[in-house]
Amino acid sequence: MQKHRMWLFVVVLAMVSLLVVACGGQGGEVPDVEEPAGDDAGEEMEEPADAGDEMEEPADEGAEEPAAEAGAGGEPAACADDEFGCAVIPGGSSIKIGYAGPMTGDNAAFGTDISNAGLVAIDMACQPIGDSSFELVIQDTGGTPEGGASVANLFVSDPTVVAIAGHTFSGSTEAAIPIYDDAGLPMLSPSATNPSLTEMGSAVFNRIAFTDQVQGEQAAAYLFNNIGAQTLAVVHDGGAYGQGLADVVAAEFEALGGEVVATEAVTPGETDYSAPLAAIGAMAPDAVYFGGYSPEASVIANQMGTAGLGDAVFFSDDGTYGVDFLNLAGENAEGAFATSLVPPESPARAEFDAAYEEQFGQQPGVLSAFTWNGFDIVAALCSVISETAEVGDDGTVYVPRAALVQNVRGLSGFEGLSGDITCSETGECNTAGPTFYMVQDGAWVLAP
Image 1 (tube, rainbow, N blue to C red):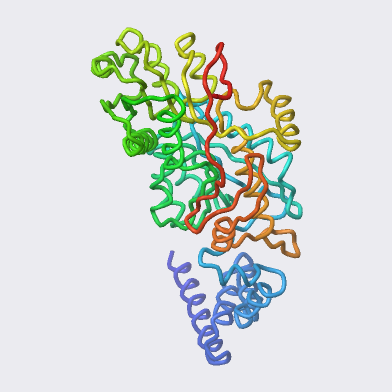
Image 2: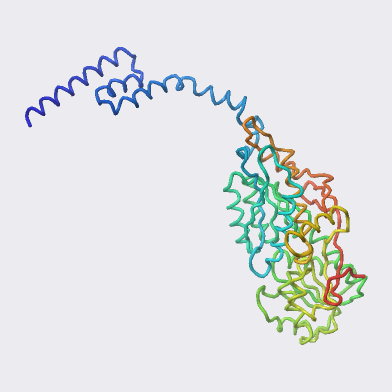
């Protein structure tokens, strides 16, 4: 053991001597300090020492090379100037548009219909940018505020998601807006119609559906002027959409000279509303207006007869219009009214209708009235993204996020299947109002 210790001492002494010489000869430069250590440590350390030597020059010039690369072939200047930077999509990767809506549960027909139409838009209206094609990424919100926030957080965590086709319901949308505002992701909703959504001061939220204010005012006018109702009972589901719409109808109906004799709230998901309907039946209104969606609307329609409301007109909204209400209410749906935004016939609509039916095996408009809006939001977003994006020399697609937010808000004169899409400074992009339908012989038809 003594000889080994003596040999180890000699080796260590030699290493220290070489280190002192190296420091004196190289002015203390780190790569050269490591080089003798590598020599004495043996062959295994020699390569890292050489690597340190090779990195000496890049260490002096490295700060300049990325800057030159960014100017010549890297991110465009627009990315550096943009408040949120750029979405960076490598060449050949997909440019993602996120769809957020109810894909499961009682209201899944809305999400299925709108996302199906969006998939048709990807094929028909969204041309690739360079080597990158568009992709619609579909996520399930369950139609709830909690689900909306969860999906929004998921989308903002994916750097290749550049815009949001949605959300579908007002409550889900309201919960998601602040998340997208913070991330700089523009939204274009097909159906979130609560008036307050465009009063939140959001830079990112826009919609192509008419507002509940417009829908409610025109529904009240139709009830009072066309149907001739003088007394009205108002029912809603307590949600941002349903209650907000019911409040507008009630206020406008009274402003026209009618009388609101009862206001009741029901709990979504329940199958027995006999108690609130009995209270309404005692008031014998000419009509019952419901703000909400088809599952609850069908329960009301099914129980109106036993609640003493057999002679009252049942009138609802674009959340009730669709095949679900017909299936769930059956013969009790007969004579019911609802607002809708089904667009007029056109060659473009006919082409879309044929593609939708071929791909999904049913006619558009059966699951909901928002089929054509589902196409339009994706087609419009693809158009704006294409106009905003820049393609690098290597095929990378750069989308300045704040610029995209501004350009979606600046949509003007975009001809969609649903009509002209021109956004106001607050994000109201619909230039038309609702159409009125009624159930006749088990089908929705234009109301007189």
